[in-house]
Image (cartoon, rainbow, N blue to C red; front, side, top):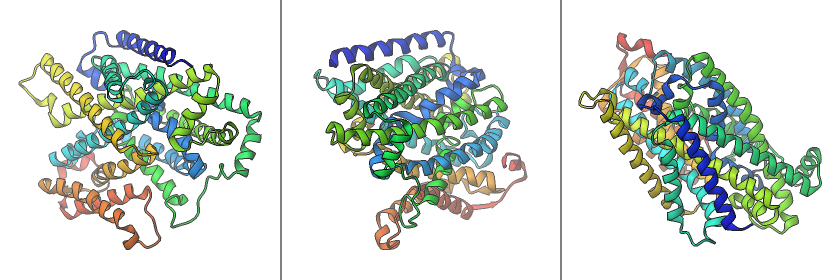
Length: 489
């Protein structure tokens, strides 16, 4: 299909997003930007969060990883279910009881200012790295299938996409994103199921027949019982629980939308509905990956990993499927970036700059500062995406989960200490603990062949990081003052 036509479709899709943004951001203010005026519909939030949770990395990398790990991602998915239940019934009641705008304010109330700033700081680092890695993955594919042939350089593509995101989030923030994420999730899921249907049709197989073929080629294997393997079931299962606890329950971007729902009960419905949909959707992505690896040899496609999905669709499927794939890909791109930039702006303004505590700023001054910060994060995204282009890793889902282990571990330790103990911290020492634990994990990981023998670290690195932070915090703590007991679980 003509790259020019695909480019025009891309522009048309963005125009639709702008229309939604214009309709939803009228009369928006800082409360609209940060928490959607606490009036978001829980069903819209739940559906839109599917797109944010999945992102372009899931859309491309999960099917691509089937060639190496078969359906092994399903082990993590089982853990996800238990993780979402824990977030719904442990963390959400706490956030609603404290009436939080930023979830990291809990750390201030319970543990002190340095813990609060450390938590917010690690979220900023984690979201910056994770979201730009996801954004890079999709931009790189758009570059390969459309923009290289038009002579547009990678940096210009990234700049224009970030400018697009700024245009529709600049005013409305969360109030707008709830609606644009719903549109984008719809397009992404339609693309997923359309590609599955077309591949089944091309292979001339039914769903049971294709699953049997995958079994024959060892593509449908879910469980790994080798204890030394990074993919050992219990490692993946427990890691899945803690990935959700940290990357959803302790993540301002995900919770910003969830706590924008008016009541706790509706917010819990949001998360449980999200869980049910994610099980179906992620299982479908694994099935799609199996179909891609069944079809690729028949079509003479040699690409693997992140490259196999676009190689099959853009090189061998009909024009209609290529259009659907492009729209779905872009729909996977925007939720992973727009919500991240908005949440980073909220966290930096509220938790680092203390925008709501500054008597020198009136409402207009707060909005002006918030817009400057929003623009600053967009520029940071540009720099980091270009950095990932220079690194050019073959499977970004692996990179994203590894980054999460290092940057969400301190958040896990901080929240766990606050909720499971009744002790007070020596505030000035908290940054040394939260920075020291990831450094120790890095030393262990890079020397594991000498220190651990045949055992190889996998996603349990996230839990180890959290345990080290918890232990370090305990070492610098003393008995809890009576006034702060109310904010423990």
